[in-house]
Length: 47
Picture 1 (cartoon, rainbow, N blue to C red):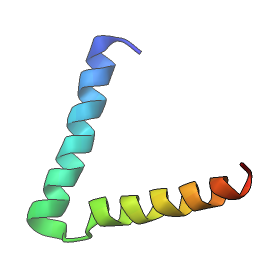
Picture 2 (picture 1 turned 180 degrees about the horizontal axis):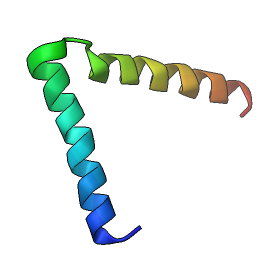
Picture 3 (picture 1 turned 135 degrees about the vertical axis):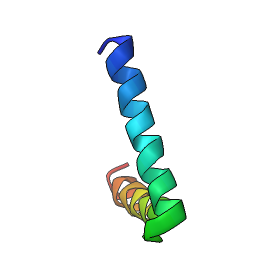
């Protein structure tokens, strides 16, 4: 991945979070953290 793709992807992700914060109110950060906690709990079983 070159620098242009990395910057573009980062701006796209930040734009989605900004759009969610300002207009959509989907609570994406909360949803992502809940899913991350579920994955960590699931992986803890395999430890």
